Length: 164
Image (cartoon, rainbow, N blue to C red; front, top):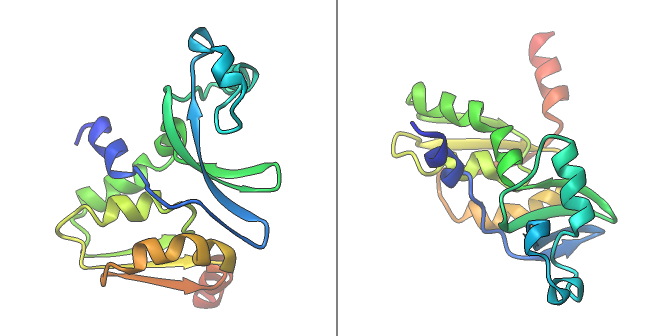
């Protein structure tokens, strides 16, 4: 499977919202060479400085629109191209194993869940998420699919109990 295909499978379309300080919002990445005075007036576009910081970190996103989850000024995650890259291996495993049941530790924006639901061989996906706010904001978008079950729990704690 080509990386481009995997990246597209992980694309999310979560609506904007906020619960107890946790926020989902859309933002645009504009390459600094394409920055205009109009961009300066908007609060939903990355600044050239932020772009350069991401570039220095070795993670510059491609220009375009993305979704992010934030708490205050802290970015929890986004669906930028480089954050999707972090999840490619999980999606490849789902595809390669032809898994009919999938267990995902952490919902986040649902990138891995979104990808899992694009495979016809996937019959059930269980997601364990510790933060109720994430479930409230993101869960309803995916729970419309009868194959999805989201469980509010600490996955590490649950796994520890299984190992005892």
